[in-house]
Image (cartoon, rainbow, N blue to C red; front, side, top):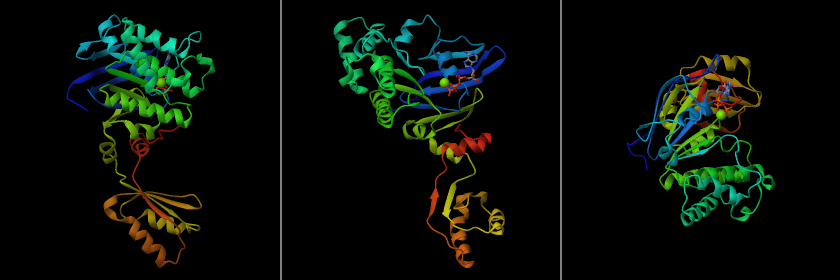
Length: 315
Ligand SMILES: Nc1ncnc2c1ncn2[C@@H]1O[C@H](COP(=O)(O)OP(=O)(O)OP(=O)(O)O)[C@@H](O)[C@H]1O
Ligand SMILES: [Mg+2]
C-alpha cells in the first residue's frame, strides 16, 4: 500500500560523461509502497539515474536522499535496506545458484539460520527450486535473470531497483519476473522498475515517470498520463478500399487529430467527445463503401510519449 512517506528524493541531478549530459536536472520522488516505473527509450538515462541514486556513480550536481538521509558510498546501514537487480546479469559462474544467492545475502545477513530462511524464500519467489545446484552457465537466459533477481532481493530489502529485468527473456520467465515484483511489493517493498516496454510498465506500476534525454517529461499513474494528451480515442476500421478524397475529407472533420490508411486498415486518433466513430460509420454507409470490423482503443503510453516528444518510444 502506498503511504506518504518519501523513500527516494532526487533533486536537480546532473550527470555528465565527458561532454555528454546523461542526466539533465533529473528529479524523482518515490513514496513508500509504490511500484514506480521509469519509462524511457534506450540511452535516456534510466541506468545512470539508478546508479547515481545508489552511489555507484559520481555525479556533477544535485541531491539524493534515501529514507530521509543523504546517500553516500559509505552509508552501509542505508545500503542494507536496498536491493539492486542490475541491467547486466552479475553472478559468479563458479558458484551454484544456491551458493550465489547465499553469497549475496551473506553480504548483509551474517546469522546462518536467518540467512538460510532468506535464501530459501528468494528461491521460492523466483521459482528456482529445481535449479539450486545448477551452475549459471547451465541456465537459460530467463532463469539466469531470475537468479540475478534472487541475488538482489534475498536480504529482504525495503527498497528494490530492477533495471530492465525482462529484456530478452522467454514469456514464462517474463511473467514470473513481473509476478515476483508484485509479490515483493505486496510484502511491503517499494520498487523502482526501469523498462522501455510500456506494456509491462502499464501492467505493474502504480506510478510512472516518463523520461527522455536525461530529464523527466511527465509523471503520474497511467490514467493521469493518458489524460495529459489530446488523443483520447483511437479508432481502427478494416477497409479494403479507401478513395484518397475520403481520407482528405475525414482529416477535416472536427475531433480528428490524425488519419492513416495502410491499404487494409484505417486508423484515426480522435477526441472522444466528438463521437467520430459514429459519424464515420454513417458516412461509409452513405457512400456505399464496404467495411469490416471496427475497434475503439484507448491510447497507450506510447501515444503519450509520441505526443510529448514527437517520436516513438519503441526502437
Ligand atoms: N560509462 C559511460 N560512458 C560514456 N557514456 C555513457 C556511459 N554510460 C552511459 N552513457 C551514455 O549516457 C546516456 C544514458 O545512458 P543510460 O545507460 O543511463 O541509458 P538507459 O536509459 O539506461 O538506456 P538503456 O535502455 O539502453 O539501458 C547514453 O547516451 C549512453 O550512451
Ligand atoms: Mg539502462
